[in-house]
Image 1 (cartoon, rainbow, N blue to C red):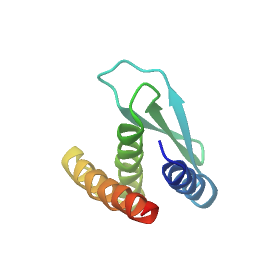
Image 2: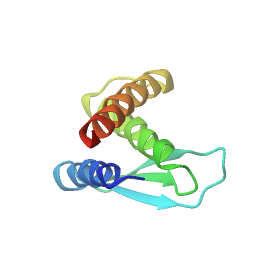
Image 3: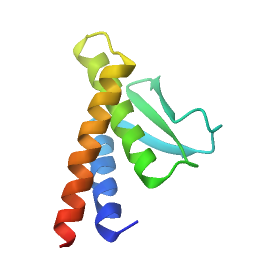
Length: 102
């Protein structure tokens, strides 16, 4: 993982934790579980499989954040919508990181 990659994930996690009261916790999970959201008293906790690659962890973070967003604005959330969002946002982020290194 590059320095820019580390900075990007730290920035995104910081925004979620400080501005939106969302906690992100890595956990060793079975391979078939990428991540999930737990609603807590006054905040959400995103659990991400610590055994995933950087790309998969970042994509999972975006996916789970989309679930929270949908819940907060009161719309039905679907796995396909969250997958599409995660794929798109990851691509934008990853391409931006790589372009900034040039």
